[in-house]
Length: 466
Image (tube, rainbow, N blue to C red; front, side, top):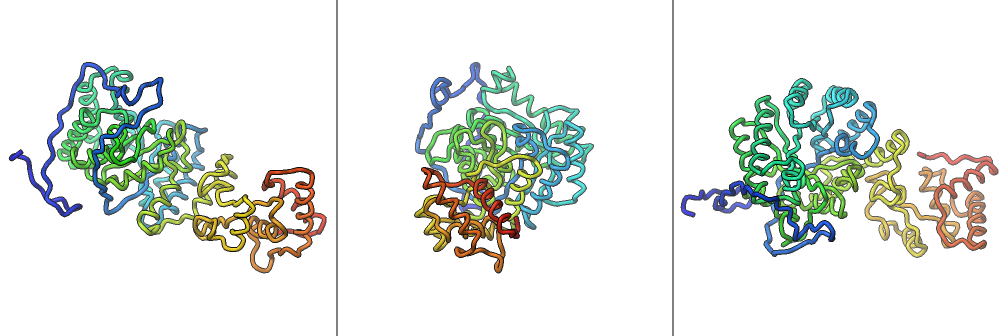
């Protein structure tokens, strides 16, 4: 105890006692936490009520994996599509670079062409980074392209170490450290992807491994990042939950026990248990500067943390968007639908076609009187998506007029009102539908067909922003 260093923590403004050093715990048989992860049972969330403190960094940001993890679950993007999306990310991140990085594959000519074209844009943010296999050939590729940083897969659970890699922990750590040293020898900053961390032995392998990584960083004077990969979505944000499932516990351990600075910690979540967003926010709260996301959550299996979700999480936590242009999120959704052929599920927050559509009659009445009653915020201002009221048997003439004006974004002077002949014709069709026994609300496609037919009969055209 008496030889442990006492130092001043600038974040807490308190004197801290240097933590115990954690050596690698080499084991003969894998620790797969069978008490928590029994394969023929639902995983268990256990508690020991060890609470760690919040430690929100001075600055937090978003990184993007749309072109890496996001491409592992869908047809590859074309070079042109990647460059267009990268331009959108630059605009969305704003002048303060809140979308800090975007990572790319380098294996195909198409991917490398996209990387070159994105680099030619000359943007400071998002910085173009890569993800590679841990091989000398791939390091040379990263260096030839001129990238300063690359992601390297360093799986850390005994599931991977023993069952996939067929190594002991000692052999695995030595292998990883030799690979990372090769990367540093090339002058490239490694971003170590600690895959399956929420099933790993945090203090028997992860913390000792990261302590060695910090020693390499000190030796080479090149940043070594730690990506906390909740590969299977097992992480939880509940205070007092036991590791390895506790995201607060993992982030705390990396910062305090392994000495990893917050700016070098990044969380990468998967949504297998619907916790990707809450876990990403929790990582911020407990000391990770970065959260790694994919646009619309598109990623392997259930997907990654949706990038657009963390934009609004950022604003809620910091009280400002810090220059991010959220209207670009709607532009991206429209680009995916029109140019890429991907339709975001209609109820997806912020981007789905119906995310701010009110359907219940009593709610629609309230929205028409004051949209604040049933709209999460000014969605027209932040997303160019004014709230809509779905048309049903309770909508009335005013409700139908509101739907037409809003859907077609008709400007002042060209809007219809409840006395317009077009509205009367649509109302007659709606009434007939329900008189014949219909009980469901009307779909957009049905209404558009009726409106189109009525406009032809009346010889008019609705002109707005659509």
